[in-house]
Length: 134
Image (cartoon, rainbow, N blue to C red; front, top):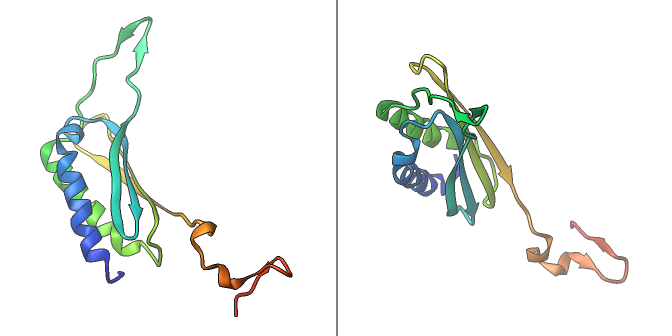
């Protein structure tokens, strides 16, 4: 785990606490967290679409219970130990409740982002047009 992951863990805990109301009873979706300099910049919840048949909305099945939301939050924090050597990017927590509503599953996707414009230009040789990595 990185040195700053403790702080990021507190921020992820904060994010999940803020989203607790939306997560409770949600059947599936993705929690998105945008990270810049090891700090959460923005976050949100992408709900999976609400289905309809013949213009009628389906009866919604049971979603995450409050105890499942707490377990999801803890899993999200624990998963930070798998993040390696990046400070900018996105964390996506995809989740779904099984049809019996007693079990749920989640997956974590880490995406690192880099911006060439922010790298030090002293490594770029204008005469040769190549990057010097020495």
